[in-house]
Length: 108
Image 1 (cartoon, one colour):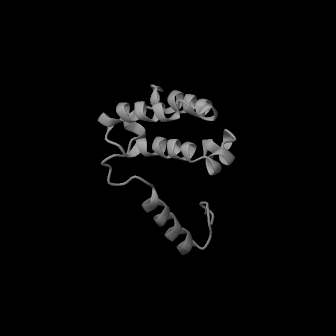
Image 2 (cartoon, one colour):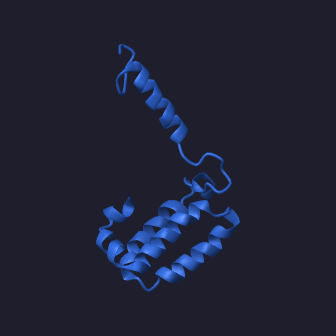
């Protein structure tokens, strides 16, 4: 989690405003795409007065909001039936149980 890399864990645990902004940023992935810009404005307004979030917000905007290599429709999961790879992980777990070891190779 980038919050850890940014050294914001202590602030996240102790400051409700920081927690709320981080949660709102996480929630962007679940909004309909047409609401993302409005939600982004609301989040930025809520985080404007929190100096410790400046670097995190800059990272998020650069990496996820304004990155042409990572358009919003790639990371947005609104309306998607499968939002995780849990089914794949379940199949891998079942296969590992049948084979009898994790990360088997062709020689097992």
